[in-house]
Length: 56
Image (tube, rainbow, N blue to C red):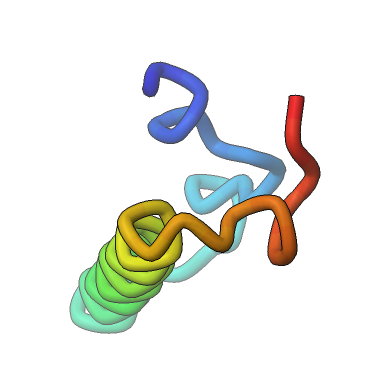
């Protein structure tokens, strides 16, 4: 879970975006993260994970 909160190469601080635009960027990234994790949770609950993702 710690890896989820790392930058992942987005470098938001270096984007030179400030104010409302930076807040919008953070909000958009948060919604994208929420959507991706909720979709992953649904796939995991269905039990079709081996068809969708690489299984360890």
